Length: 464
Ligand code: SF4
Picture 1: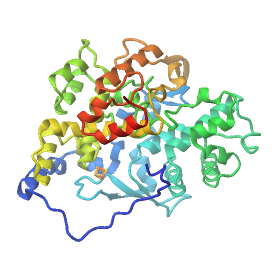
Picture 2: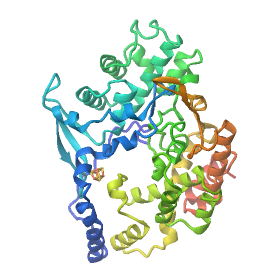
Picture 3: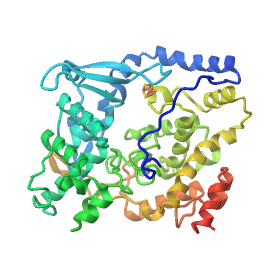
């Protein structure tokens, strides 16, 4: 919405009247109960020090794709890209927290030694940084340079994932001979610090070929031509987060192709974000989300498996519910909440007598609203698709004979394009959307209280 309105920022000024809480005693007793385990968590200090990179070796499980999604780096190599002992040799972190957060895992990083001594860099989380700089751009464990890249991207207003994924693609096109130095202002592009810094500036200032890249995926594909789209890994014009479904086909990687807010804004968080989680962990997560027996039966209908599309549909709603309540998505906060605590907090704060059913509809309403807005601007099922590269095998960087292909979550069978289409069918059916168009039906929009959007879509001729 902000992009299409050319809106750069929204400033909220603090009012003077405060916030009225309907039942402050009850509200604070729930908050205190939730806060105690957060404050007493033996991992709290580790969360504060490492943020989402806590347990980076676990994140690295299965490896990460790189070289424009044509190879993957094994987990042992990826795990070495965050070594706190080395990281904090030249960097000092001052911890920062969002208002009221008892953890505070964000930070200001001061580089205190070396070429970039004196630089201060504000960081919310380092996961996107490690994927985009250390892995995609091969900067490796040079932490100071990685932070300088992140800071420069922020100052230019560039999305670090989008920028590095596009640069990685152009380098791949150059290696394949599709793009030459004639296109790239006489410069040979390589994955290194100087190239990254130079091209951030060229894109931000729209200089030469930087002007082409500044157009984003669709614009650059149209300008370059020559079949370059075959190697472009984007979903609806945005780079995927960092999940490659050939490494882990789970709700997060499936949702990268569906998310109405853009591929990298993944909401389908679940225990399956890590590979090969036992089925009972997935089941317990569904139970925590207060799913109905029918929903559970559908998700776990096939023995020893779970349905990725149907789980995606429910974990998306769950994410939307707790973020609508202002609850942080990071594990150390989110895991302390369950449906009951969220419902009781909401009732204590507002004094509104909301039923469980209505409460559970909140997330579904958000997802339907986002999808309906997407439909108005022209997106539909035709845009929900896996990039072509994801149907090809991916080679281990050190041994091209070791390959991974697209399989189900437990790696019991390979998935074909037809299997993926069937999963989209299951997803739209599970959501109560039109399977042919992927657009919410009138009945569904009315059911979740979006009568006005139903009227709008009908007026546009998008639904009956
Ligand atoms: S609310 Fe979340 S993002 Fe903010 S400091 Fe706490 S854990 Fe970090």
